[in-house]
Length: 200
Image 1 (tube, rainbow, N blue to C red):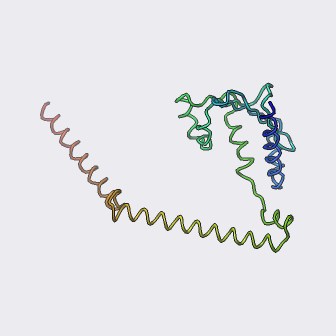
Image 2 (cartoon, one colour):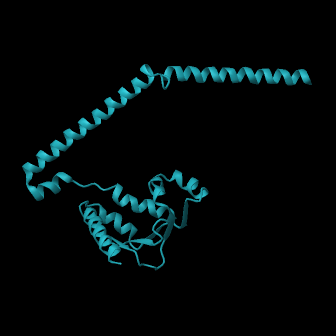
């Protein structure tokens, strides 16, 4: 039992601390106060309940009270739930079962996805203004370099696949291929109509 209680308390404390760093979290928490979601992952076999209060969120493995939404699924399916367009497909494939309000899970995920934390301010409180500014500037430069590297490497891979290895066609060739297929389809339709007319 301790193996679930201790990590759950740590995760709950961390989640509430992160929420407290955004001044707008209180407003979002108040809108969801009293709402409860239960998640049952088939791999674990035990339900996990998340409740919202006006001051934070509460995690529990032993809560058996009524909830607003109960999601039964597999661990691998969880990332797909971010996009609501996947929900119907997953339900039809028997990979997801939802009892209650299906929008509650997305509203709860927005508690964290819409966080707006001033990390520079948080750092300056802990290590001082100058070191915090140095770290923030270094992070910004590193992020720009990483984005540039991703763009350059993506372009290099694209050029290599199109021009050198001819694994994928260039956009112009693909568009020409589509037009040729449409023209061929139109000719086949015309020929089919002509054959039907001759039979009649």
